[in-house]
Length: 241
Image 1: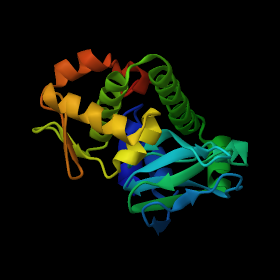
Image 2: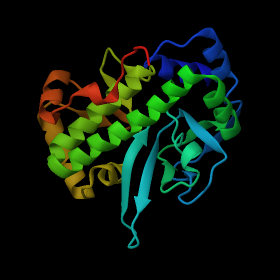
Image 3: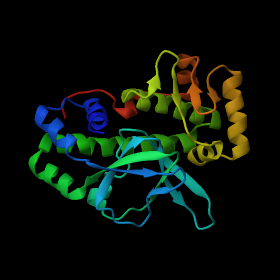
Image 4: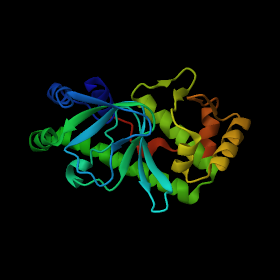
């Protein structure tokens, strides 16, 4: 688990030996969750932040009439609720989109890091800023992109994010996406019927295939063009912070 967290943060900046040691001691306890179960409940006050080790989770809000919007997706190496440390009360929930394994970073330990490790604090803070950048990108996609563009954009984003922590097949430009078409619709703000039609159009154009739980991108450059995808908002480059 420490290797995964170090790998993720090293995409953003170089960590020294002391910082790596601290991260290795940060998340000693693990938990598992069944698919479709809550990892963090809306309105809860967590005493630890959750690091995703295996599977995928989604942040979501449910309206009074039962309609759901998934506002972001988390992949291995992501803290699903690092912001709960300063916010205290969760204003949204986090659901396991597949069977998940997580590690817990006590807020008391995170507090010590902020008091004694200014550089590591900045790197962890940066992960929450990137979360916000992803939220902005999703907002633009839902508000201004066609269903085809936003679906292609999401497939591109996940390939980049999973690739950063070693969870893609680069030779075949593919990755595992263990979600349902209904959940994909909740992310994109479209109906199940529209999801199916859009997937068929992407397949017809030779841009994306989705068989079982495997997404493959046969023509990356064409998909990037169709989806208007610019990965700069992911900030997947290492530089001094």
